[in-house]
Length: 101
Image 1 (cartoon, rainbow, N blue to C red):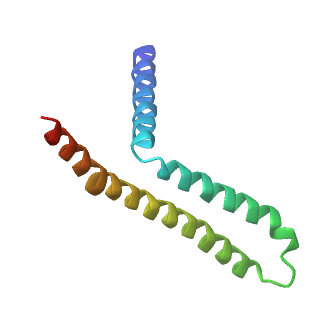
Image 2 (cartoon, rainbow, N blue to C red; image 1 turned 45 degrees about the vertical axis):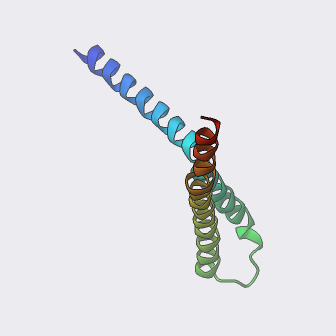
């Protein structure tokens, strides 16, 4: 009984992994935003020793704003890219297909 529930859990995890990979292929800017977020947070945490006279709270607020700004920027670029594909590239392909017939 325990083995079967473990097997079901493992198959569910694989489904989630494949779902994440499918979503990442559809919109590659989401993983890029996540990677940028973690890179900025990691960098700012390493630089915390050399923050000078800046208060800890101000340093953390700047880190949060920079990381969130990167994520919002990546999401904005992703939306603009998907709009470009949907409203510019797709109609042109449809027009070419109609012209060839």
